[in-house]
Image (cartoon, rainbow, N blue to C red; front, side, top):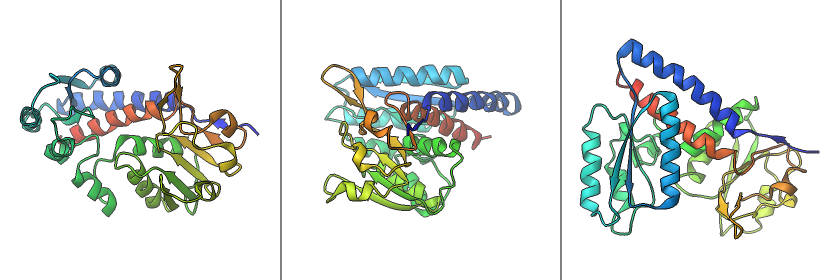
Amino acid sequence: MTAELIDGKAIAKQLRRDLKQEVDELKSAHGITPGLAVVLVGSDPASEVYVRNKHRACEKAGIMTRDIRLDEDTSHEEVMQAVQQLNDDPLIHGILVQLPTPDQVDDEAIINAIDPNKDVDGFHPVSMGRLLAGQPGFVACTPKGIMHMLDTLDMDLTGKEAVVVGRSNIVGKPQALLLLERHCTVTICHSRTKDLAAHTSRADILVAAAGRAHMITADMIKPGATVIDVGINRMEDGSLAGDVDFEGAKEVAGAITPVPGGVGPMTIATLLRNTVDAAKATA
């Protein structure tokens, strides 16, 4: 058996197409152009590429973007001031601070300073609290994008065994809550889990988000399972690899995401989704 390939690029493209229509309607009906501000401190090459991709996607969807570029030695107080100015700007509906920032900047304090109504990354404690309580609010882009991918498979999630490998605030924890909200039975595994394979081999839905290349091998996967690989690991030869051994896993899984071209495109498309929703809330 060879697994169905879950094409994140194609799913994200359709989502962006739908968003373009929503943006056009928002502009014509209410005179509102969704605005996303990106705060980038320093010049980390990976962050530069990621920010550039976000801008390109926003432009295609008709979303206005604003770059706040700050020098590597910018103080924590100056970054806080930049965020506060964006909080007060009515033309900006979403604020994203590209992480990580340099050592002198307190990432947690910066995230906490963002207006929760503009927290399109879904990292603010208010956003996470709303998710935990089952209340409407912004959800972190990667797990929200993964749920959109699962929905395209037309799968009834009720009662499914879901295993999330990774417990970060950005992916693992919110992913588990979203799956729980959809009536899955959820297990969270992490670096200190004993006998990881005993858990992953039970999963109807397996989300690998630990940041360790090829840690999930074919013998750890339940035949026919849906495997979502969040990992993006740079190998010695410069190639990218996921947390799942793709070549082996695709012979066991029922459906699987590739790396690259799986979850990554959905993260950016979902950021646009959150930004448009933030703008709609002001109409």
